[in-house]
Length: 396
Image (cartoon, rainbow, N blue to C red; front, top):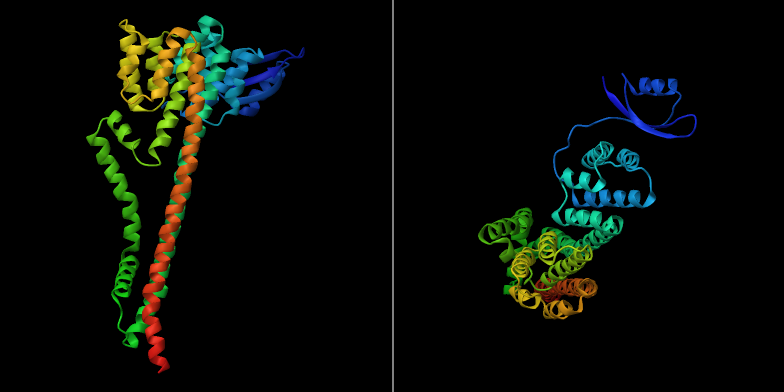
């Protein structure tokens, strides 16, 4: 017999949550009303585990729910079950229900979160640090802020590429239509009147034939070939080498690097504010920013600090560290103000990422416009020179 999970109030207005076995939703409601309860909400219980890890957006939504519940004072099991009824993701719904069940069985929120799995290492570290310091809600709020900033920077990067890509695809489609209609018509006219065609016209007509006959294959190749080359690139290089080479791509590479440095600085500052040891903070911050080169450097620096080396010497193990960030680590070692300095550095790198994104968008737009105007100018000259000869011959 299926189970139904309900939220209800009794005759005194007391909030009650629980489960009831019934043959149907209506049968469950009838049983509850017979017991003097007023049903507020009810869903069919589904305690089957849902496979797969929480996505980044699901994880942020979970942390937002936990932050609001810990600040509101609502009983956590009740609030978690109510939140589970509202979410659309089956994985997130199961996670919220699982947390509620563990807390009802006597576990603390921190123990329930850590034992649930599916959380990144840096978030688990924040949870443990927050439970020790009593600042769990503040640290979770800071985690959500950092996650939202990282998502915004990712959207900014892809929007930088989206506009030029759409314009280029549109231009290619228009070029194919022009080649199939206008250029072929002009070619037929010139051939019918026996006009001698200069080399530029012959080249344009030959190119138009290739575009018309193999345009679809060329468009597919523009997608498949880069994907195949990227797959080969992934096989032949380590993650750190891959990321290092990608970040050297003009215009686009600096955006990725500044985004990674922004996330690293804020995440490192957040972990240090949670009073985590410096070696552990390096390890967790490096593994959470999605930059393999930064992760490798942080792992080496963490081991060096753990072995007793001063921070000013350990940061030298990061070969590609920005000069300003290296000086910041050296300066804040003795000033005991590293979290504030790292937040400031993160804000500066964020400003650089946004400025580089605007610059890249402008440059790519100008390059595409120049390509379009160059093609139009070449096509007009190549077509109209023999047409002028034809008009002159017909005039006499």
